[in-house]
Amino acid sequence: MIKRQLTSKIENELFKNKAIVLLGPRQAGKTTLCKSVVANSNIPPLFLNGDETDIREAFESPTSTKLKAFFGQAKLIIIDEAQRIKNIGLCIKLITDNFPEIQIIATGSSSFELANSINEPLTGRKWEHILLPLAFNDMANHHGLQEEKRLLEHRLLYGYYPEVVTSPGNEIRLLHHLADSYLYKDILTWERIAKPERMEKLVKALALQIGSEVSYSELGQITGLNNETVEKYISLLEKAFVLFRLHAYSRNGRNELKKSKKVYFYDLGIRNAVINNFASLGNRADVGALWENFLIVERMKWSQANDRYISRYFWRTTQQQEVDYIEDHDGKLFAYEFKWSTNKAHKIPNTFIVNYPDTVTCLISRDNFIEFIAGKV
Image (cartoon, rainbow, N blue to C red; front, side, top):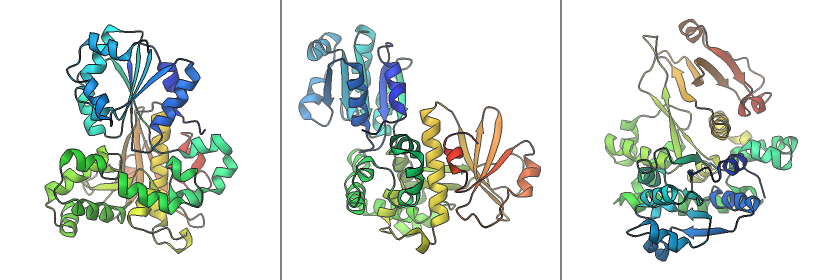
């Protein structure tokens, strides 16, 4: 079993009189992580699945007495797909408040459903984590750093979904299945989107623009959606852990772009499946965008696993000067340029240095990317 960076953290949070909430995309390994935690705890678990009708019915009209009777003698309760259970936040609150000897771990693949259901009832009563697909650091710890470095180009094509990583030779088939079966499931279920083909067209348009500024009006023309609906759908795709946005950074410069956004995918295998392009990197025009997407997501996985609270941006001017990636944390600004090619000279634009003279700057290439995604630069 591939050990995740979150495993030890969740183990240390057990039985501290707080619920543990684990969010993340479908098939990212939430259930497997829970089973690993359970195995190491030596406490008999009770696994419940919110996709099952009888489980949802058992949580209807909850009272502490009813819930305790349902759980019996179990002390460690795992609730998978908890977003499917009505009043799940109230149910977990009742258990946490009345039975401190019981540990609840709730997982959900839809942050817009589960987070909305639990945030108010569980204020101060939960630890919350996000589990994304496997990380470079997970795999380096699993089979060695040199082996994972050798697989770098493979990861840029096929990503890090656990089933994809552990099924060599079947990557393309599995990724198309994941994209077709899971990509929109939560969104279509709860939002009752009348024309899902427009959502699919939007996702494909975004997949073709990773690393570039996106225009809602341009996307609207491509998809036949108005600007407001485009923005709504992108927000839903973020909450379903399909993609995420970076906003433009601006404080000082008159010519800085202030309202622009870039879009990236949480997993490059899914992105490449959406556009059905698994050509080798030597034959691709988008290798720079793939590299940029890879580095930002892996940095994000590291920061989440290590409780680093980071604000993320990009920077660009109307004269097309740009910085690929900016972090704001610990009272400092950090600016990074990402370059796949190692035989070209690159530097942070002088305009940016003048406007933000105290910024720490760094060029990230294949020579030093391991330090970057391990939080060392």
